Length: 410
View 1 (cartoon, one colour):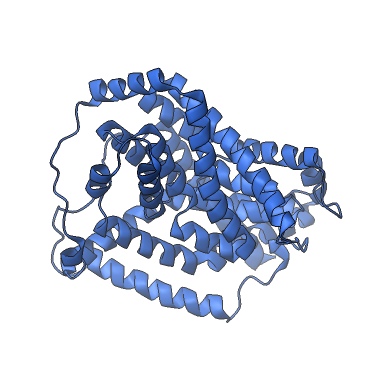
View 2 (view 1 turned 135 degrees about the horizontal axis):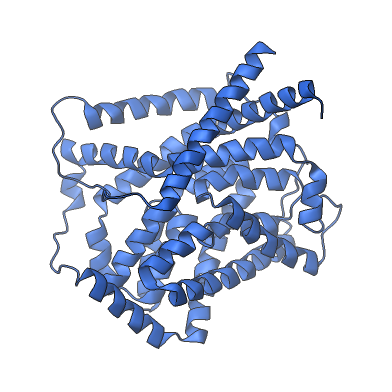
């Protein structure tokens, strides 16, 4: 690769990353507005009071509460721990965790933008199947003693949770300005939690789309880019390599979607892409946090359960879609080759939802000084993972700035 060619590819990679983000911006805003409103009006206290031990009703509630919660993996891990310590069953708690990172509203919007409706259906139907598989695996393995030991560990380390927490009336709260100020606070907290993952994910996706040759994906994922349906062993390999690839990117669910679109554009099977998307809870930062909460034995058990469940789910979804003739066919066109910026529906939707962000910013910081009430995430010293993500995000901004300079001076 000569010097001139590198600078051209560098510019192309950065424009691709920015094009990815521009394409998804309105979906991010819409998803986080909906998510923030739901989290304010359906509180964690209400979840704690209604989730019980494993049973159809409790698992369904755990799944529903996950669906209406944040898509940030780290926030979901903290909430799951809180629910479990409070007394929620192990399976309903894991159902909440899986649903809060795979069934949330905002994730569906982003998948629709980048991958199409088949993957949206695959995400939501597969997410439910993922929870059912997890439930069956836990029932079959019966880790009763380990669960009791871990719950005792949490209560010994952190103390008993307070009883009788106040559950506000959402019908009254939704009619108040204070309620919508809390929505605005939560909205910007959501962005604060995910900006690093999103920045790194979109930057890496643009770089991979331009710099990584198609032959690499064909080597890594057996059967990718070939005509006709790959055999079962190729599908199985794709569903295993998907989580491995996600493990080394360690980017959250929202940042992984543009990377998933790059995989799909390079011919990776439907099962492989679905497995990659579902793998946000089997990456090292998540494993490390689970080990911190529950100990390495339980963290390893959860990892094994999630891996088995997502491989089974991805394979079942692939062949289920194939049976009904719904498997999407990749055009083989990279996102880098599509038009990135135009005066189209994306442009107008972005303007509209940026205006919504402006209104929320006024509610958050305008007018009278904000009170100290409402929802907030605990402060304290940032983990090493957060610090690494921060510096990687900073490097990403430097990379993006350099590419823009290269674009305008070439």
